Length: 277
Length: 250
Image (cartoon, rainbow over all chains, first blue to last red; front, side, top):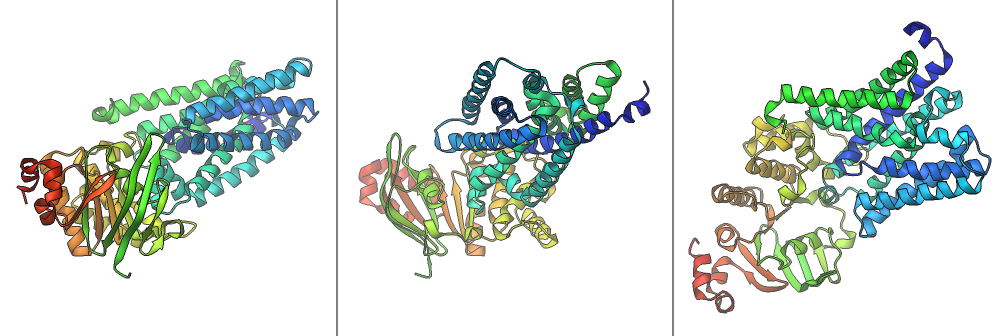
């Protein structure tokens, strides 16, 4: 099968389009999360999505309809992580671990009560981008538009809180509000990205492009652009490799992302040898 | 009062470990350069964080520019320079120019955007502080002294009326430290900016500050450095020899 033939299939076009949009969201938000030391929030929210998907399936909400159940729960969980960090005398990673444990254990109990794991629930563990439906592409496009608009409007505020919460506060920025926007947008993106790479690998979409971009970027805006380029390229190349080599798409996407990261590290050593340690 | 920039009345703050500040009452007038000194754990940083609403005040009250802190919204009037080593993530990918630009956000309304005039302003302040050659460097690539200047540029690029600095020279060698204090004194004189500077180095700051506030959970002394050096209370606190050592530079 040649490349043009591959690209002529509707399910592959949908996978490439939705995948690129979701990768764009995750990599842009990932830069802020990594710099705010909230890298693992994707993992935590993915576990909550697993639990809430079990609830959705138990209530007979399937495919895109399951978002009606999962989205509100994951949005609330993201705010819960933030509140635990701000008020609960917990560090970000401990708060994420707490919410993550709650999400995954609730999912396991519900799946067990509901008669064991079914195929739909298992697909959320590893993702299945090639089974993405047209309505899910539309949702991804709308969400991408909304998130990118908000990131553009609040770019300087997000930049400021990523640099220093303390300095942002003294600049009159409502840091609680901006932090809430960041985690809510992340929660929305995680719910969508579940279909792409699944719970097991979701944080790689958020963390790896940002980590790669941080190796080479000379400037905050440049860092966001590089992360977006790495994230989108990884999804496109990963999907094509998975089809041509008959490999799982989610793992292929993550491996390509990691190769980009490794290449960025090597390039940094070559271009900036003094700053490589 | 029109000239009153900072005022506190019986202000107290507590952490879980206990009370950090007790019954703090003092006033700072426009144009003052106040050095806040005291031993480790005396509440110096907590005091300025309370004045900037970064920690919650337990009892008592504080005003900035005559407005109670809870109602204060004019943050463009305030510049803040924290202890930089605690602040800066060494892998943060911002350039010096981008970092200094953050200081202008307090002047902007939603959606906050920097225009050409803002970029000119950033260029001017970098030049004034002698760091224009660094503008495209990443902040993680700077030396301690350079980073301190960059964060100072960020703090004053919005032309604040009050500049608050928290142990800005902690990581600097004595020579760079003295140059930094002199630079702050110049900003205080030439721009008429009121300065509150926290340091543990009472001898060095006395050379530049117009007033000293000696803190050890309570205010033990508030007045000019000359008064500090002649104060019998300070003599009994430090012993005459230590007081002489602190004051001999002046």
